[in-house]
Image (cartoon, rainbow, N blue to C red):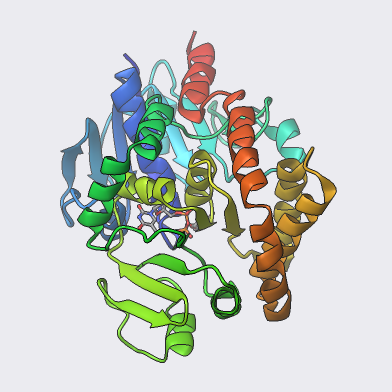
Length: 381
Ligand code: TRH
């Protein structure tokens, strides 16, 4: 059994802890590894995992030892494997303990997800530490063989298939959420996005169409656009907003597993950032991605790179429909969103088939937790 220290700083939002928590759970649960997860913001962690107690130095959740990362950092013996998520810099005292430890730990920097080509050249590269004998390895998630793959639990496919096949499991789920079961012919859409996304335009596109839409929105998402469109201020969980054929239901923020179920239960998923984007791909539903905005428009290159991969092999008109809607959604171009949505929906059957095909392609790279464990094992030998 190997021991792991995973370091996570919460910069903003939930993606950093979302990825680290998934990785930690999977290593502990599926590979019986001893995992310690250091997190600097337990309040954010609690949003995606309500079992987390705030202001607690150490707690054990789902087989993972969760430690509150704050100064002064305690004296601990470093684990066999040290994962620093997204270049978050473990404390200097801990790095000094890594230098002193015999044998020295394997040190991994778990990087951000990108479909850009350069990732293939950088995945797995060593970077010698400037002032010690330590070596840090860059581990990149990715969509193609030659990268680290994407996080996917062993039981994920079966759990999703069972849920999507079972009307009673879905009925229970809607009931647990406190919303009525979907009406026949009503499109179910989940919405998780950044403020830049063109939500008002999409709501108008739905209202102008002849397909009733029910949109499920975890609290705190798109508040300004919802208030503008529905003319109401109350966006508390439980609120139901209606205009024409569009209904929005505000949900509590869900724990990660229930959020997965929401994605499985919906017909189209609007996802964002990194982790919900990946989960949207595993949900086998058409999706619309709101990429995390970066300086100097770096996110546009990332978006193009992903679209090139995702749309490869699609019939050209369908690829154009996806590309136009995704680009418009990310720039917030209202006119383009309103014209692109109905075209996107015309391909509903083909997009569902494509989602299944795509997830099959992704699965060929293996899942990130196991790829990472194997990578580290080779270095520890
Ligand atoms: O929250 P995000 O915007 O996180 C982002 C991205 O990771 C981005 O790459 C990073 O640079 C930035 O943070 C700092 O989006 P993301 O990645 O989808 O993470 C959201 C997490 O929250 C994910 O694990 C799913 C989870 N989630 C729930 O558990 N319940 C919910 O109700 C919702 C909406 C999300």
